[in-house]
Each structure stands twice: as structure tokens, then as C-alpha cells.
Amino acid sequence: MKILLAGATGLVGAQVLAQLLAAPDCSVVVAPTRRALDRVHPKLHNPLVDFEQLPAQAPWWQADAAICALGTTMQQAGSRAAFRRVDHAYPLAIARLARQHGASAFALNSAMGADPEGRVFYNRVKGELERDLQALDYPSLTLVRPGLIGGARAQPRAAERLAGALLQGLGPLLPR
Picture 1: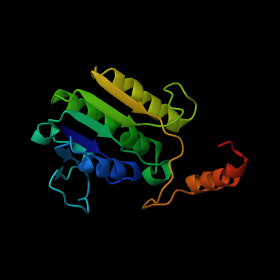
Picture 2 (picture 1 turned 120 degrees about the vertical axis):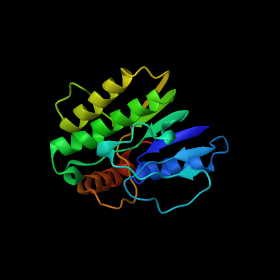
Picture 3 (picture 1 turned 90 degrees about the horizontal axis):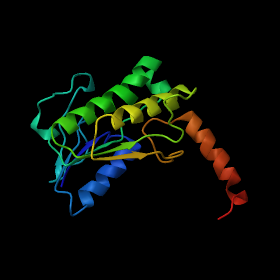
């Protein structure tokens, strides 16, 4: 099986990449990124791309399935418009191109609380993307809505550190 993975340089995407490379039924992983990955593997193809101008006719778009773990924060993006590009426009363009080139399945790492009508900008953008992906008519569409994702990030996120500390403090009070 050939899998297209967008977002392989991030916390979630890097873990997905490791799992795909280890999976015996996955023969090729195409991971388009802005900068080269720091790993080499016989199954891995890592085309360098500009997400603003994705190459519509690149042969590597042909995959059985696509997984998108692209995402940013408002702080990293710097503006609502930039955030919307990374968290909505890029994933939607990737999904469209993968579908046009024959992918029959698409999986998105979205967010808990995603709602296209929501008042919180972050959740609204995630919900709008989910809605727009549903219109692409994939035979199989998986929308994953994780809660807070912990782990070592290249760029620390203050809000996640605070939430993690609060949850850790509440840990002994929660049922197991």
C-alpha cells in the first residue's frame, strides 16, 4: 500500500511516519515537506514542496490513501489568515489532489471541539475543514479529534504546558 503523509515533521506526523515505515503492509510512504526530513528509509520518498504552490501533476500524488497531520498555532502562524492557510487551505488542497490522483481514503488529525459554526476561531477552522473534506466524496474519510496532545515539540507551546501541568496535578483525583 502506498500512503501520502502530510505533516511528517510535526509531533503527530513524525509518529505516524514511524508507524508507517514499520508497517509491513505499507510499501511506500510519500511525505511532502517544506524541509528535508532527517531520516532515510527505503520506503520513504520525501519531495520538498511549497504548500502555497503544490505541484498538481507530480507522480507521487498517486497513493492508495492520504493522511494529514498538518497544523500550526496562532502564535506560530502570526495571523488568523496565515493560520487558516495552514490548517484549512493546505490540508484541503492536499486532499483534493490526492483524491484526483486516485486516493480512496483520507484521514485527518483534527481537533476536539471542531465545529464549523463554533465561536472559537481554532475550532471553527477545524470544523470548516472537516465539512469541506466531506464534500470531496472520499469512499473512506476518517476524522480524528484528539484532545490535548503531549510530547516533546521543537517549538514549545505555553498553553499546552499550562494545561498539561493542570492535568498532571488533577491526575490523582481522576478515576482510573
